[in-house]
Image 1: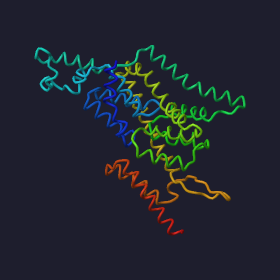
Image 2: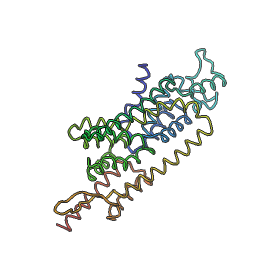
Image 3: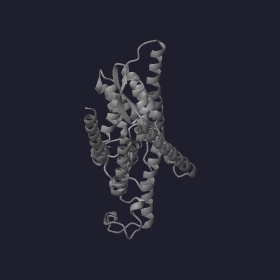
Image 4: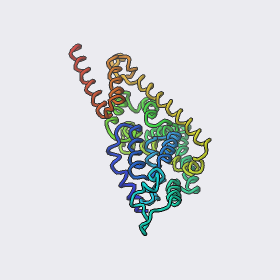
Length: 355
């Protein structure tokens, strides 16, 4: 057990500091490390776990990383080296795959070892059922408590209200990180807990940091629960990540038994296609609220948002960021930094013309 924990920590510790670029980049990093380098899982299992993560609510890349650790934690290091993709033939076997007597294993023994290595390690059925019940309680308890307080005409604590919204968001978000942004906006900005300006500024800042977009909920929790920012950040983290992780653990045994069936693979392909549509929807919604400006409201002035086309300059900045990342492989932090420089340039011109 301790050896498995140490192996996971050793393999994962640096990813939290180097995983820039969002879920698309995270998936590539995980494949290079755990399929190509460490051979913890084979390519087919990796793609299956990735598809299953997209079919379930929550952060896709985080669930993928979590699932790899779960299914591979009981696999000895030397067994990982003889997985099917790494042993195309007996003649190409590396020296470390020889037996203690100095003889190379037979093709049949290699295939048997590969089949054993490719078998998913998942939680037991009783544990999976307990996790599924835990998911139901995790979802219903805060919602029922909030509804009871509202029906009794009592004030709902901000922490409970925010946590309930994050649990709902973590349960219904399909499509990974890009989809979570507009949904979180509905759950915190529309509620009046965070302004449009702060929401978009935090989003831009977080793109320059490593980790999944779901970390956005942590920053929003610190703002929404202003009287206890640490508690708000914690509730945001647990609420947004908890549902997907519980469901993934609970459904892994079912997936392990059904993954070879054509109908199951067809269902997963359909869910992936739907998730792709959700990603495009999220991008469009962000485009519609990405322009933040100050509007006059009587004697007061407040920050509001509108489509980027409200000022063509920002549409050009968004297009330039897209082309830089897509066509020229610019790192995300560079694109975000370029946007900040463009904002400073716009500010300088605006002040000069209206000063």
